[in-house]
Image 1 (cartoon, helix red, strand yellow):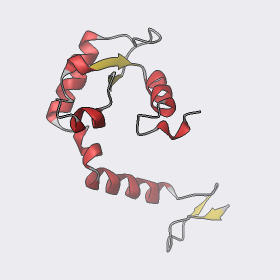
Image 2: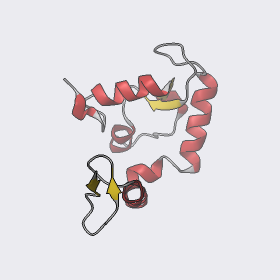
Image 3: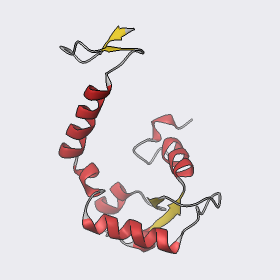
Length: 117
């Protein structure tokens, strides 16, 4: 048992790190201040997601039920940098959560590419 790692928080947690309340607060703050995170809640992105998943109801990589509209072959960040519409369904593909997590974690061009080997 350890004390939450956020300075001033007295909550005891079973593992090291922050308590659930402090983790939730950090996530809310990040979503509120990060324009990249806000982009995923816009009506345009919700439309993008709906149309991509309608077109690709099964994961294009493994065939499981698709639940994530992935920007492909160029990331959302790169589409915006190139002046292209990131919410065009032609620039997306349907993936299951497992394949999307794996793709994001191993792609050095994606935000999660820190895990690329």
